[in-house]
Image (cartoon, rainbow, N blue to C red; front, side):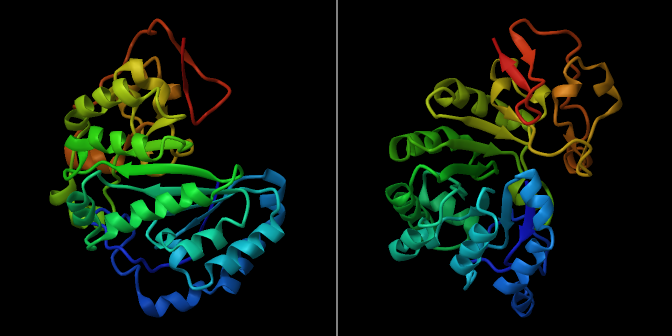
Amino acid sequence: MADYCVWNLCNSNCIMCTNPQGFRNREDAKDYSADKVLKRILSEKDKLVKSGVDINLTGGEPTIHPEFIYLLENLRKEFPNNTIAFASNGRRLAYGKFTRKLLKINNLRLHVVVHSAESKIHNGITRVPDSYEQTVKGLENLFKYKNDTHMVELRTVLLQQNYKKIDELYEMLYKKFPSADRVSTIFPEYEGRAETNFEQVKITFLEVRPHIEDSLEKWGKKFRNFYLYHFPLCVINSDFWEHVIRSLPPDHHETFFMDKCEDCFYKDSCLGVYKDYVRHFGKDHFKPIEKKIAGIEKNREDYHRPIIKN
């Protein structure tokens, strides 16, 4: 996946946003005109076409870019075979005319974030009144107008505010959007605004583990794909490792392996540990798995999905 920031502004104010303070400078928005963004992406056209990787548009909130449809239409023309992906809070999708126009463009991957099944919790995280209602309406429009070339991933980021009620969120998503291609649960990265608001959002793997495992037991097989992002293998029962995704490339600067990881049989199948997590919480939450576990096989064919459960 090749990442390109296409917009620095956002219509939400999420408490755990990983963008740095000062990123949402309105004066800087002029540097993200569609033509400037296209020029930046097209400078790597040969590499992108040859590799066939997804072109991932980041923000800010990409959908509120005033030329977003124009940008997508031109990218589709220049890259007819590459999937175009972007993450969104889903709020602009609540406008049916915009969503219908957006979904005339084929081969899109949309990652829409839903923080809770309760509007009070969701809106408290986004710090925008009625954002929950807009996001749900946006998802209703998305599933109403999408075609078979569109992939939809529903995401949530675990925080103090929502992790104890994660089962309620999965239940709501399954009832309303059972055809979602993926449902993904993300452990937070403590950077940007999440670092500034650390005391308000902080959680540990030990705290979330029982809630995640109970929900995986109940919902893991009901959705088409049910994923965990940013989880080292040793913090989740091996019964659920098939859901763990290596969400970063090898040797990413944000993660590392501790000395004790050298004794782990599954080190070569693990994401590693976030440096920021260890800085805040220490190393005691992680323990090497020293022997092979029956029924668990390493997936040598797919780096991102490292475990096959027999």
